[in-house]
Image (cartoon, rainbow, N blue to C red; front, side, top):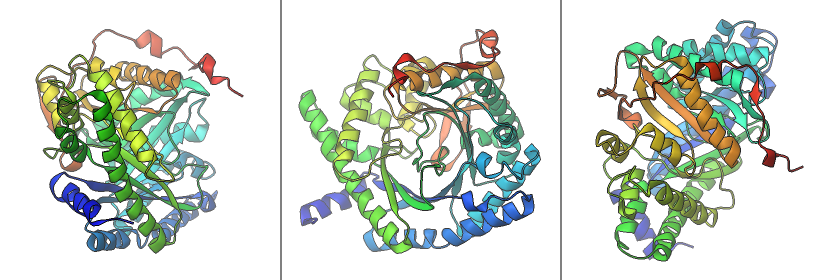
Length: 454
């Protein structure tokens, strides 16, 4: 039961502290759509998505109205398309037709993004995987709602360095093919290590092969709520600080649990997980960097930043786990530079570098996220950055990801404007020393010794 005090607290969190349900994501399995004929495959995919998700947006809006809880995004994730298209697709152009079908279906049902133009290649690439990966630049340039991800490593399998090398080239080509939009296509492309099957957040969402036919996952976010709570305990010891974060995360997760259960009941689709992630937005007061400053840093990036972020991430997870039967996805704190005004300010002040961000990813929920770099950055350099981040995930048995945006025609000191939730970003410098000989070695980096737990 919810008493009047808790109800009042929730209203205050929504109206004054930027609390929202960031997304309801319906995961849809496309396994039954597989066909060796490309036209029939596309027809099957379109029909399955539009029939299964036809009420998703309407139900989300009804819940918003009835409970007064903002639900910012309604989204769909599908089975990795490299698996679905393997029988029918003989070229990368064939995979582009599937991307356009996904885009058309997403438009029909009214969702803002659809994820799953994806491949899972942590140990090696099939012909189908490689065809899909090579289709990504054209697919993202010719669609509006499609998001793509590629998992290139895991703690159990190691890192497929052939895929890492290829992804550096693909990111750069995606940037070139969408250069008229400030290389926006790269904002819809994520490279993963240890990608979770149940991630509702774009651009990395896909419907895992271990999932059922359809599922409802909810992503909740509340950096502003956490910051406001910490303002009340300013100067207190670490025990009080941690307890405050945990209690706040619990309350935020309960809001997500309510929405998830209602959406599941009304859509008659099983409830999957709540992802409690402090995912910032460009709105003032909705920043993870501001939380770090409230903990005691002058700027994000100052000495102590990694420790403060580790504390925050851990307490968010502990509070969330107590509030829902099924917490999953990426739960914790995100540090996307373009989407967090505090992070942007820290970069512009010289407090936060790419190397410091990499150190922070050892303890946060994702990785190097929404980072704009010069358009002249070499593909091999992008691959080297990806390899570093994948190694962090592999060795630490955690999910890490890279979403780099080499902005064609712009250099360090300039700013790129993406708009909406994607915000804007300063172009960050990258290390100019070459790693080309390293990334051109063929094969894979073996799994670490602690992966052998059978």
